Length: 159
Length: 211
Image 1: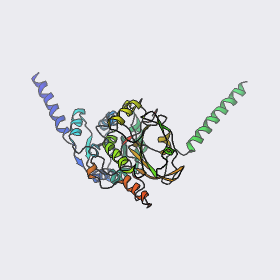
Image 2 (image 1 turned 135 degrees about the vertical axis):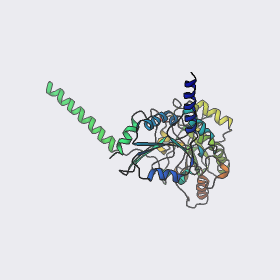
Image 3 (image 1 turned 90 degrees about the vertical axis):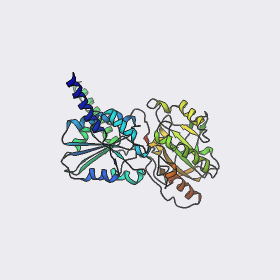
């Protein structure tokens, strides 16, 4: 029993330490993620804690992140656009025990950066960008994704 | 008989293929561009009466805003929308807000909820229900809040002069540096060129039926 308690404590510590990492970033950070040469396909999802369809599709990204070594998921919170306090995002990440990389986009004027992600983006979330630096292909969708959609989108930038 | 039924099947397949080709080739309705003539509408207001652009005989133009109750961006902009009407309705540019969200997807945007929002916030401008979503489709509204500034060029014609966001800072009205809608209306009032005609209206997706 004592040993089990230690193991549980260990798990708690591991997950608790993983949760604290949701850095505030500027748009240049995302541009770097999009442009840097990588063996992995970059899957960049834009979401916010207030966005119900975003939260609904988050498990798809978590599953993808856990299942595929050739894919790197980055979950970009845009909460700061409405609320300067990132605490809500920290608490959400902790509660949902998110394992994918979470960053909080610290920008306020969307018209200054939104076209750098994709020209077709109207400015609503959820939105997802998939970039394959080895083929130079990219795809952008501005809608809630269903089971299987991500795999199809990834396949479309494969070769 | 066998031959005939096969022929019918071939015809059916051909017809389906033809329809598929025709619909695939048809451009998707993308809504208005700057300079397009905005269609008038007849929509139900929260007071039970219907409202059309043509009701405003003395208007010089309109600030049409696709909005809703529930979107956090709509909430953030609510007081700014009220202020826009206070400032510009007396100058001939009244605010007209339209909610196109499907209440079966977003129950907080039902006609009843619209009424209580308009009442609690003392709306002195229309808050219309675009139940069929035809007006939002025709204008090409996608998000809330999504602004269309219309320039009334003659008694029966208004042209789209600005499409997009209200300003450049959603969370803090005091930190705004670019007032896109005000700049557009001011320019029209002074018969000058609108400085910025298009921005992206950051916000929530309009909740379309069956999507």
